Amino acid sequence: ARNIVCVKADHMENIPTKHKQVAQYYEEFISRSPLDSCILFHEGGHWRELVVRTTSSGHTMAIITFHPQELGQEALDTQKALLKEFFTCGPGTVCDLTSLYFQESTMTRCSHEQSPYQLLHGEPHIFEELLGLKFRISPDAFFQVNTAGAEVLYQAVGELCQATGDTVLLDICCGIGTIGLSLARQVSKVIGVEVVEKAIEDAKWNAAFNGISNCEFHSGKAEAVLPQFLSSWEDAQPLVAVVNPSRAGLRERI
Image (cartoon, rainbow, N blue to C red; front, side, top):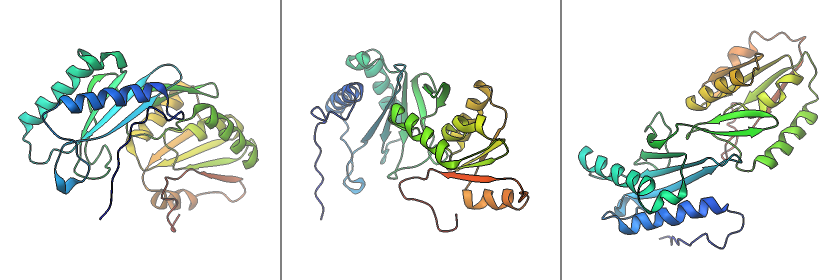
């Protein structure tokens, strides 16, 4: 058996105030809901985790995951309507959400392809600026939570990779293209690879919006995409790979 303890985050100084505010109002919403929260799937319940994403420009995206259990479509639509009403017309209005997303999931975590993120309110994306570039962020796409820290990190990566004007940069697990795009002006070409399709869509948009034309981004598993590229690579051209994998780390094949 395992014990699961839920605590309030009010006292945690490393969590932004806006995140705490949205969490507080989500807790209030659940307390008003006739449906229970869901901690262990086999014990029932519906309302699951909340993800809050904020940017330095003041955008706030809230993503709420819901376990449908045995609910039919009409009941699901009712819950989505109540959630939207709470955050757009009710007490949660004070959160001033840029985007409110809802995802039905019977798994611990799943992608947009497995179970689409449903936009209940607001804009489909939020935007952040980093190293003079503007980035579009989808709910399924990774972006560093500490923008100032990310700028220091990416500048250090640029120095460590010692890229020159004829270098090809492989941005593996590229997400929305932050590393590759921030280094694009130092190299001849950037090739980004990412398994999350929506992140690749963001990366392509980000390249076009920022006027960066020496980048190409490919959706797929790195172990499948990279061999195709390397088979046609000219040995005389310098090649540098930057890898920013998920917490699970790199697979052995990569």
